[in-house]
Image (tube, rainbow, N blue to C red):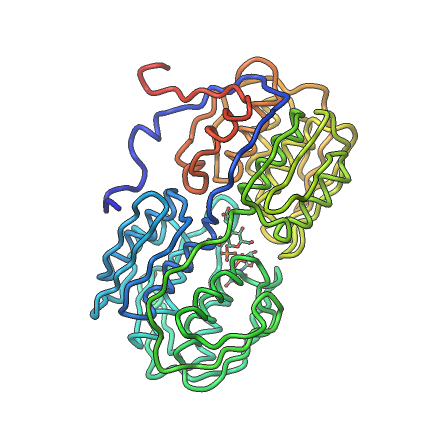
Length: 435
Ligand code: EPZ
């Protein structure tokens, strides 16, 4: 993993040329879950033994987390989808602004550093286009475990002796917190005594992190439920572990098929991670068949408008809200999309409206009036999931859509365009010299 791999200059200048496509036919395989591997990479710091992690997607966020671990003194190599982390005996304890500002998930090195070294300095993550990214629940959890926290020059400065198990409630204004749950769970694994996390996040990625920690020798129960119990142990050891499939990538592929019609087999997915998505797409008129480890998605290309409210798991995932909006933009009827997780997560509305969609924002909701046809246009991705939504809109639009801002797409999708081309989508990547 090269230290310099963050956002290559050509990615910034490249564009995707997306033509009207569909119906889609064929088979695609889903990559490993980005939002699972990021906290698991941080968890590998809880021991000085080597860990090997399989099914790792080669996306910018993974390379960014790798860079943070290297700056902390670990050796990190990614060969294909196999990530090896060798935390050396000594580790630094500072995660600097230039790295954390690029990726908020960096905050989840806080728990492991405090558990191993009793101190950490992690830059406060800035806000981002999907809304403020507070970390009050992370800090509340650490303080409950006996950590003294001060904020100095934009950094969280945390000092602790041996962490002490405690009962902590991690429910915030917007419900549970995925990474705060992970951060506290990681810190609690080496604390003295038992920790109870109330209103813990139940996302599959939290379960995956817990299973990784248990494989390392941690004692955890209740993961996947709102009440997690962690019994501290003396030490943890290195492991070999395989990441779960990416439910958001799978959901994006399902919504693409719904938007332009077709018959697509999506392999290597966990249907139990996609209950709300399967429910909503079925309500919209898409036929979804659960086969062992795969989903067969059949659609006519004309879906019905449905209302969607995003909620913590098992509710409809906020990371598929933008993609669902692109589908509703060409569905029959009027739908209301309500964000209960990130009320500001609507940067994609203006770009979709430039493509002829009819969407109006009302506070934490968007009212989407389906139109017959979107029209291709040059558009710019404002954030990761909005970029995926604009790819889907481009497939459904007439003429051609030129999408720039691919650095956002590549944060979380290793090969979305290749997967879509594989089932018949007309997408071409334009280098700088071709524009
Ligand atoms: C994780 O972020 C995901 N990222 C996000 O995916 C995802 O959108 C989010 O969970 C919700 O599912 C990773 O796992 C790396 P939260 P996280 O803490 O943990 C508020 C993507 O596109 N909150 O569950 O940071 C917060 O503002 C990314 O892949 C506090 O108030 O999200 C939000 O409104 C985007 N205080 C709500 O909780 C805190 O201390 C849920 O956020 C922390 C969060």
